[in-house]
Image (cartoon, rainbow, N blue to C red; front, side, top):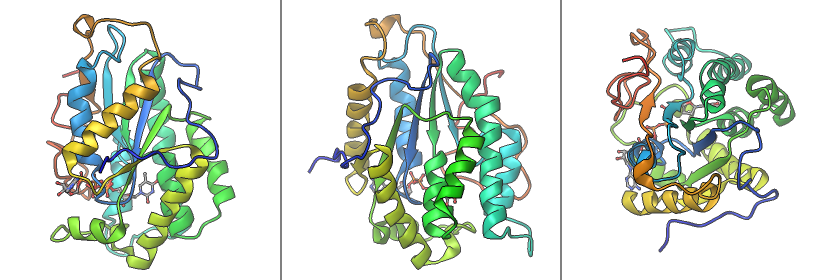
Length: 275
Ligand code: T5A
């Protein structure tokens, strides 16, 4: 069975950027353990030589929460807060928004302005899924906050890795749960259902994330090529000077968790831009 399966959408995903910046912005969304980190790494290896990036453009790989130094500190507070310091749902919402505002302003927008491509593990859709559908906070309020935090920036393409909750729980067996993951199965079920709603509303493209990882990777590539392949003039892949780099926030915040697959917090095993 193909892992590629576009969800019915209320509004079609744009074939090219609607932010009028020269770069392209790709986002992976889905419930915990759906395989975002795995696919991010596969795309990080493939995209620079894919011929999709224009000559000289670079690929920035980032994530939320934690794509900046400030975000890294917020990530620790959100996922592994010191005892008795866990944020209430509204504070949690505002902290995710603060992380996003800093990430867009300091990292994503400058990269897109420079013509680079940005590949991000989670973005605004996660707030609607977890804090909206999951925690039950107002979706209208979350949209307003999203507009403030992103300053209107939207991804060119969002890939939704759709995985049944039972498989998500199975894949994460034996791994310590962070504070959000530990919110209970009923919460996670609402989040999972929320992702389905959001995919339809926001024109995300659905992938069957229960397929074997290499098959999901092929489907990701096909969707990216189909959606963004015509975004610029044709250039031979071997003329492409693209390289991948990742945000490197420096020392790991004390409370921040170690993420499997990452050589250090906030990096994907690559030196930061200045390294
Ligand atoms: N959050 C985040 C909010 O509540 N609001 C927000 O606004 C935002 C931005 C972030 C937490 O914060 C919440 C959501 C999250 O709970 P995180 O570290 O980003 O935390 O956590 P996750 O996204 O949950 O990251 P995980 O590492 O847990 O999951 P991934 O990255 O989706 O999955 P991955 O690739 O690590 O794979 C998990 C396991 O499955 C295997 C892998 O080898 C690994 O063992 N696997 C597969 N197995 C079989 N078939 C496949 N196709 C597989 N793909 C991967």
